[in-house]
Picture 1 (cartoon, rainbow, N blue to C red):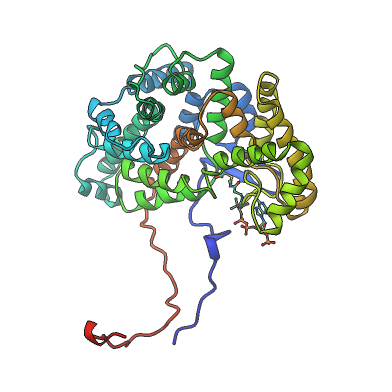
Picture 2 (tube, rainbow, N blue to C red):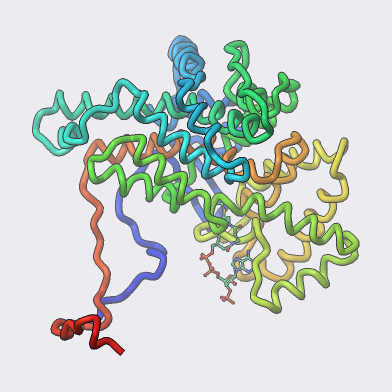
Length: 399
Ligand code: CMC
């Protein structure tokens, strides 16, 4: 009989690798990408520049950034066959499922997707072959970063019975995303807000979807398989799916009567062990710095519309921090992102795909980093039953 080892539920606190892509200081509420504070990046950078930073480990020089932007623009368009795949989906398919399907379908059109055995180059002594496989992975990653906004936008058009919007190359990545999604060229303010949101969501230390992507990549599989799996992990309401639930809760309070009903709504929710979506985090035990930035933008946009929802959010935050703050539960990035996206006219079920459009950069960067010293991830589970000789019962004899 073997001794049960200590089980670390949810792998909380387990450190399995070294990563320099992004890091969180949960006690002090700090987030850095390659050492640069998120506040600096949100203020001065662009999503394109941040993607380069995450992958390459440094900010691009001017000509490098221009070349990177050209590359992203060159890969915006989708193969017609992939659009056809999306058109075959039932129109009630959740946008995250459509995105996962679209990304998976894209794989076959990528000239770098070779035979699976090529991945073994990651494990061999041939440095040239290893580098070549790594470079292929990077090119595939960049193509996915470029195509994600087009895919998400294409599904929005298709499910509404329209044709996907032709990508324009005079728009930034954020502008292109809004254009694909809404079908109109966005204002400078809308483009900037989306750019900031994409920057804030691009990477976030080790998290469920990044880990999923790395687990798949660690088998020496390809970048498309890894990213497709990561999308599946991001979809869950405990991870990227929380943002769409936040708006649902705020609207619930609004329908009950607004700010004056928050306390009653909250008491009711907590008495049933429910959770305030957009609150709490496995790592942050302080205010999420991304939430602070999005709160400011939500406030700016609320001057024009959805003012009441913003007021409900601010009051709910205040009351909830009084109640849960001492447990280290504060607003996370999702608490205000939904208000921002709602104000931009984006449908609620497209909020999680926005997260994916941003996070694909972090996924690619983390996988490329892991591939520099790849090792198959293969943990173990403890066999609780410890039965090794249960007899096989023929089907006729089973009770
Ligand atoms: N509302 C109310 N209570 C909460 C919340 C919340 N949002 N989050 C945690 N708690 C309580 C929980 O009930 C538990 O209480 P008790 O000890 O009395 O049983 C305690 O805090 C610890 O909770 P936990 O689930 O063990 O903590 P965790 O580290 O697994 O939680 C979390 C992390 C994000 C899953 C959780 O805070 C949660 O469910 N939040 C709501 C969903 C959400 O907003 N998710 C987005 C995360 S940020 C975006 C991203 O990175 O993907």
